[in-house]
Amino acid sequence: MRPPHTLTPTPRRWHLAGSAAAAALLALGAQGAALAQAWPDKPLKVVVGFPPGGAADQIARLVSTPLATALGQPVVVENRAGANGNIAGESVVKSPADGYTLLMSSGGMVSVNPHISRMSFDPVKDLTPVASAARVLVYLMARPTIEAKNVQELIAYAKANPGKLTYGSAGNGSSPHLAGEMLKSQAGMFTVHVPYRGAAPALSDLMGGQIDYYFDPGIGLANAKAGRTKLLAVGSLKRSPLFPDVPTLDEVGLKGFDADTVFGFYAPAGTPPAVIAKLNTEINKVLATAAVKDRITALGGEALPLTPAEFGQRGLEDSKRFGAIIRERKITAD
Image (cartoon, rainbow, N blue to C red):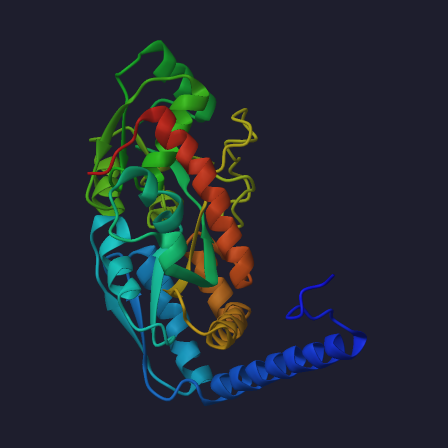
């Protein structure tokens, strides 16, 4: 015998319950639409985790100006460099989850930093992907006086003379550093890593002959075109449109070599989905304009509009890829 307090759902009750749930969803949808229409009603701030002039800073400013026009509110860019972007990330995590404070960072915030440093926050749980902005390539460059004419000759020399060649990077745990270790691992060679505080001083020493090679994140392309560095290969799965005759490392035998990183915008976890959706739509519109696409290409990258879900998934996939080389090579932060 069924207990007296138990009710068996009848078609009538299921109908009423379904109607109530549908009404609740419609109400939430209406609230979200109203929020998206009313938002924003004050200026936005984009916090960049790297110094002025770098790729993240340039992309943030490139997108922020037309985004401000689209949203009808100023978009202010603020640089808070340090700890591979962790300082900026922490400040955004602690901000109100209302869409008015965003983070512009390389994908290393999610894919690299958790593997090499102690963080005060969990970037996967405490940040929400808003929109990717650009896929940033790295370019294998050598000093102009090096005898190697291509990647094969560079690898052959390094293997015949272990420890004699040096390579620079933008710092321990940076994407150029990871690319350098990926090259050493896949080619089976040993060269000495020289970390710098940023890519610019590494490029300067490369042109001056103080180091033998390094992976450039796009700042040295003009020097490569002018012959002040020797561009040997692209650390990507496809060639750069700026240098269509320069092969990828995958093409010259290092199968699957891919050191690309994705730069993009994040918001504090809990930011209303309607606000995230509006930001994603407007940023993707900006990325589709010829002026912005051309400027990102000139920086050595590629405009990469994605949905928030696609952007988040890319971060998780990169975390697996870079995490593997970090563990293999025992890479640590500065």
